[in-house]
Image (cartoon, rainbow, N blue to C red; front, side):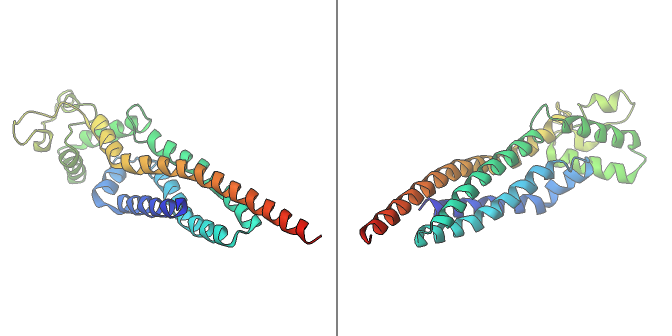
Length: 221
């Protein structure tokens, strides 16, 4: 039963990870701001969730066959997946949280685009897309334009009030990434909990099978 739940969670995490990876808005923001390090945690979780699906099928077979060797392999595999899952979630959280190293990269990229604004169509397009989709202004705020004697673009202003966005893209993009990755990291950590339960159950079944084999062998002596 636990293996079926683990299988379902593995499929869910894999689906969410792949969807986020191919989602245009998410990938464009990462590419434009040169923060592809965010993909590292996502790749680890994608690979891990694929292994979860395969190991879950193997675990079901091991339990049905009551094979001691298979049960031992399953227990070890569950513990390995536990470690990999925690590592992947930690990496993804590290690069999608406020205070992470990507914030300086976001700020530097935004300032670089602002230096080219408004004379470069390339920089204008990227600034427009980032600020409009995320709802931010500049790297650390509107002052990034003001201090460089640059006019505030329309995308820097709230469409309802007309006021400039208070927060810069350094913070807003980080919150945006954190929100997008929240469910993936949460489900990955939940999967880690099930890996521990599966490892314990598999080991208990292994011990029971061994004891049964020893008792069966003793009867025929």
